Amino acid sequence: MEIKKGVQKKMTFIERPHENEKTRALVYVSKLLEEAIKSKENRTEDIKELENIQKLLSQKKYGLVWEQHAEQFEADMKFNIPVFVENKSKKMHYDKDSNKFNFLLEGDNLHSLHLLEKTHLEKIDIIYIDPPYNTGNKDFVYNDDFIGKDDEFKHSKWLSFMERRLIIAKKLLSPNGVIFVSIDNKEGYQLKLLMDSIFGENQMAADLHVETSAIAGPRRFQAINGSVVKTTEFIFAYTKGKKNIMKRPLYDSILGFDSHYSLFEDANGKLIPLVDEIKKHKSLIEQFKLYDLKINMPNLKKIIQISSTIESWIYEEAISKKIFRLGDVVKMEKNEIDSLNKGNVSFINGRYLTLNKNSEPIVLFRYFDRLGMSDDYNPKYGERTIRGNLWRGFSADGGNLAREGGVSFKNGKKPKRLIKQLIYASTLFDRKKITVLDFFAGSGTTGQAVMELNAEKKGNYQFILATNNEVIETTYKRIENVNKDYPINLKYFKTDFLDKKENNLENSLMYNVKTLIELKHGIDLDDSAVAIITKRSDMKDLDVSDISTIYMRSQTHKMLDRKQLEELKGITIIDIPETFFPLEMKEAGL
Image (cartoon, rainbow, N blue to C red; front, side, top):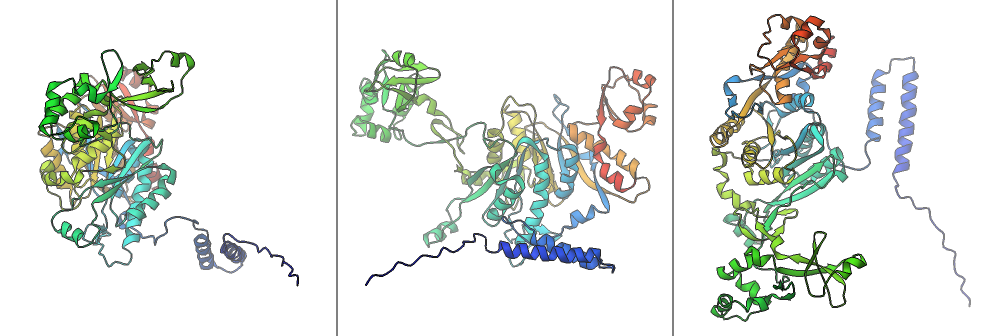
C-alpha cells in the first residue's frame, strides 16, 4: 500500500508575539484620548490619565526598568536657586609658583553638579566616583533615611539617585573624556545597564576587575568551607569619544623567565641558542652547578628565581638587548627581504627581523623591551606583562589604607595607587591642564592622587571634589595633611540657596556669580591683579593701575562708552557669560 506524503503546512511565525497587542492597545488609548480632548465636557483628569497610560505603553523595549523615586534635593530647586558661597577661612594658597586653584565643594552633589553644568559643560576630562554600594549596612542615605537590606525599593531608590547624577556627569565630560565608577556586585549589574542607557552601550571602554580583598582571616575559613569568596570589585569606564582610553600601558611584574626568549645575538650579529652564550661564562656555569641543574632553557626558567647572579646578568642592558624570541612571518617588499640574512638580526622600520629556514621574513621580539619598572604595590625592575582588565594586587594596599592621607574613613576608602594609575594611564604628558572631578569625594583620595601626580611631574592636573557635610571635614583634613608634602592652592565653597521669589533676585544672582567665575577659570578673584564688574557703576571706584584682567558681565561690556573702553586699554577683559543664570532669571520674570 502506497502511503502518500502529507503536505506540511507552514505556520506564520511571529517573532514578537506581544507587539500586536501593544499596538492595538496604543491605538485604542489614542482613540479615547482624542475623544476626551474633543469632548465639550471638562475631561482634564481623563486626558491626564490617558496620556500617562500612553506614555507607559510607549516605554523603551529593552533596558533597565525600575520604579522612579523623587528626591528632596531635586524638589528643593523648584523654589530655590543653589549658589556657591566661599568659606575664606579654609582657603589654601601654598603653591606660590601658581595662581591656579583646585576646589572643594560642600553640599549635596546634585546641587554641586547643577552648578558645574554652568561652569564646566564638556570641560571635565576625567571623572572618578566611588558611590555608595547600597549594601544595606548604612552606606546609602536617600531623602535623609538609611536604606536597609529589607527596603523593597532599595534598588529603585539607588538607581533613581544615580541616574540623576550620571546624566549630568555625561554633560560635563569633554568630547574625549572618561568616567570611572567603582562598584561591587550588589549594584554592579544594574549600574552597567544604567550606564549603557545614559552613555551608550558602545561607549563602554572597560570593565575593570580590581582585586581589593585577600582570602585571609575569617574569609579563608569561608573559602575552605566551600564559599566562593568575593575578592574583586568592578570599575566601569565609559567615554564620549574613542574607546581606547588607556593612553599608557600599565605593567605587572612576572616571576620567572619567559623561556621563549631562547636566542642570543653574538658579536657577528648571528642568532645562536641562549644556552650556548651562558656556557661561555664561568660564573654562570657555577650557578647551575650550585643548584645541580643542567644548562638548558627549562632550568634557566627555574634558576632565575633563586639566583641573583643569573638574574643580574640577564637583566643587564647590554645582554638583554641581545636576547630574542621568534615571532610570526611578516609581509615585506622583495627588496627589503633581499636585504635580510638568514640567521642574522636586522632592524628595519622599527622592527627586528630575520629569515627563517624557508627564507621567509619573521619578526623578532627583544627581551630588553619586556623589562622595566612594574606598576605593582612594590614596584621593581624585571620582566613585565601589560595589564589587562584584571587589576591584581590592590588588596596589598589594604594594610596601608587606614594611614593614607592621615585620616580614617569607615566605608570604601580606595587605594591612592589605584586612582593615580587610572588618571595617569588615561592621560598624556603633552596635554594641557587635565581637569579631574570626583563628586563622591569621601576621604579625598582623588585630591591626594592629583597632588602627587603633579609633584611627580606626571601631568598637569586640577581637581574638583564634591562631597556632603557628613564627611567634608575628613576630606578637607586630608588635603590639609597632604599639603605639608605637596603644597596646594584650594578654594572651599559651600552650597547655599536663593529664594526664587526674592525681591532683589537679579542683584543677588550677580553677586553670586563671583564663585562661578572662580570655579570656571580656576582662579582667585581676591587677587589684586584681577577685578570683577557686573554693572557699569562698578567702574566708578575701580583703580585700574594694577589690574591685568577684568571679568565683566557681557551685557555691561556692550554698554561701555568710548572713554571707558579707553581707560581699560591694555587690560584683558573676559566676558561673564549670561548663561550662568538664564533659566532662573526667566522663571523669575527678569
